[in-house]
Length: 410
Image (cartoon, rainbow, N blue to C red; front, side, top):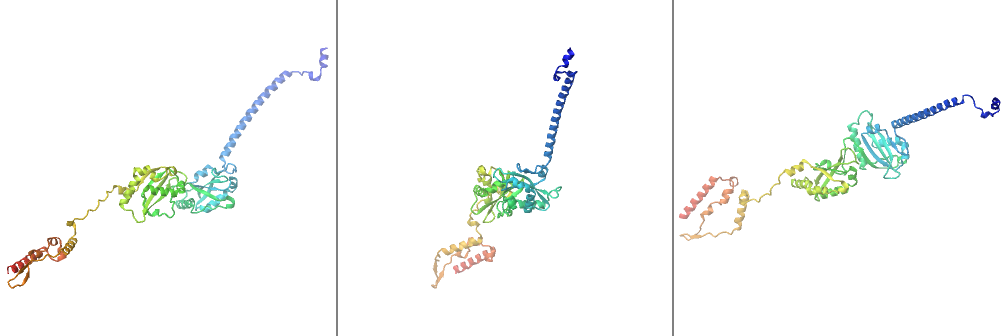
């Protein structure tokens, strides 16, 4: 009866045999499989992210119109000479033409045995719709350093563009106009003479000092710089100061700089006394406190003033005493003789006494002293002027006295 009842139940109410054991095994395997799949997925995802990060780090960070353009680090480190400028184009307009930009730069300021590489292209923060471009020079072939002749030629070319004596002309239809040229790095440093007509190379450096400023800042404010320095040195109207500015890192945007100064005069070489005055002005406490006349807020603080050997020698040398006026005894014999003759001309003649002879003739009474030469003349006139020696003068004096006594007694 029970069997028949069970057979009469609906199909979905029937219970298969050993169903509980099968359910337990299936659920356990499912849980193991789910846990294993999640772990595998997590490890796989982590490995993939690490791999992709390594790939992107190794690949050159080049074409990206949004963030800009950056060359690989090894290329940048190999560029011993670097410079930068601005273009009035957006980053997205420049990046497709990187190779053309390198070719155009080399055509303007490239030198033999080198090649130009663009290192960075980024949007300018200072000017909207402008792009900062940084480029460098590599030796060609790259495994050898740039030779000294090429470096000297390259330094001159970069300085000419920086001083706007030459223009960096690029295809305007692609890159627009270039501006704000700066030298970022140059082996051996760069020295700038802001005045192209300056005869600085012909002059001796008189002193130098250090400023916490850049070559570019001094160039942009050079008129004020020179006028303030002239005022601080108390230069005369006929004097002028010429300077050259050096940065040991070879950069026109980094500080500090060394300023070498030379002072020239329209009258020619500066006398020793004027050099001594300038040395005292430069090293004086008042001049140092006044920053050599330079505006501290614009040009920075003057440090490490050093004088040339010429100015140092002028400080150590004793000043010459004023020449004393010559005394009468120090006058030359010729001057003494001329003065005596002029005095004798100015004195009126003294009338001589007259004696009457026995026969009534008039004879001049001569003063015996009139035959003796003037002591000042006889003692001062050399023998080469009269032609007589001292003994001859004495003999003539004695002879004149005898003649006078003979005639007087007669």
